[in-house]
Structures are given as structure tokens and as C-alpha cells.
Image 1 (cartoon, rainbow, N blue to C red):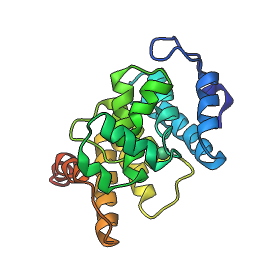
Image 2 (cartoon, helix red, strand yellow):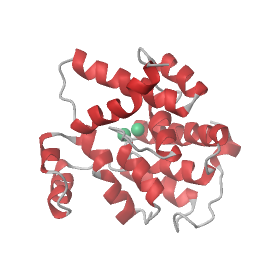
Image 3 (cartoon, helix red, strand yellow):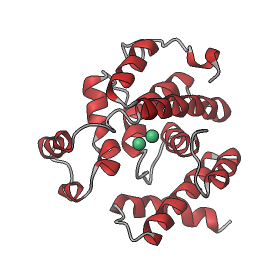
Image 4 (cartoon, rainbow, N blue to C red):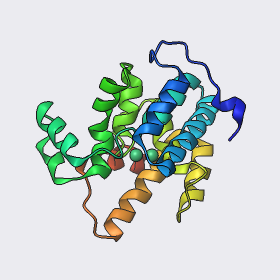
Length: 205
Ligand SMILES: [Fe+2]
Ligand SMILES: [Fe+2]
């Protein structure tokens, strides 16, 4: 990792924590390999923010915190789904969906992040959304194409993201849905909504 890139100083606008304090919280919450993924997502998100004109500070924070809830026990999510009266259908899914769709609540509460754009980027990073801000698109893509990722289709997704964020979002959404269907895995309904919002428009071109 480029050391200078990792040493952004925060303004205090989005979190009262310094980057060093935030990084420490992530390190405590995650396994070493997940923690390293989070650092790579942060750097990729920063690069995309620079390329596409988004706040580098918001990209850094959102990239770091996006997987904050990844290693929490299921019981925490089930409690939160009931406490905050979230969609009951969430109970039919697991951590792969919950750590984003529900996990942003823990980010808000425990990492003292109130910025709605950052929280939405965390919420949407697993299943996407029909309305994703530039930051949400950046986090969605950075998570998928960070340099540690190695799966069939990753280079296609990297190339698409070079063209535009929307092309990247379309590519990832289409590949994810194909993968789920191919492997007879359940599809969380929001993924279909995301697909309809982002993919057909792109493929018509
Ligand atoms: Fe994630
Ligand atoms: Fe991730």
C-alpha cells in the first residue's frame, strides 16, 4: 500500500475519530485477513473518489467501515432486526446480507458516524440499491474490485469501472445475479430491484 495515501487526516466533519482511531476499531472487530481487505477497499475507494470527483475523506471512512459488522454473531443482527422493526424477510437470510443491510446501524452507533451518505454506502454495499449516490457506487465497486479480489469476471468489472461507475455497478450486479442463479442460491429481493435499475439500461447501449 502507498503509505502517503493511507495517512489522510480527517476534518472531524464525518466522525469525531481520527483515521488511526477508526483503523484501530476495525482491527479489533475483524480477523487479520478481513482487516486487510478493508484497508484495500479504502485505498481503492480513495482512488475512485479522486477519479470521479468524490470526497476522499468520505471514501476513506466508508471504505474502512463497510465491513465493520462482518464478524458479529447472528444474535446481534436478529436483535437489531426486531428492535428497529426492519423487514421480517431479513430473518430468512444471514450474515452475507445482514452485515450491510443491518450492519450500518452498528456503524452509526458504535463508530459515531452520522453522515447519511456514508451510512447508506455501508447499507447498500452487499445488495446495492436502485438509488445509489456516487459514494455508494464507489464503495460497492471498491469492495468488488480491490486488488486482493481474484475471481472470474473481476477484470471485466475493473475495466467497466474504468469507463464509469455506472458501468461498474451494472457489471457487478449482473455478474452477482448470474452467479447466484447459476449456483441455485437464494436471491435477496433487493438484488433484483438493483438489477432492474442498473443493468437493462446499460445493456441497451
Ligand atoms: Fe461486505
Ligand atoms: Fe467487503
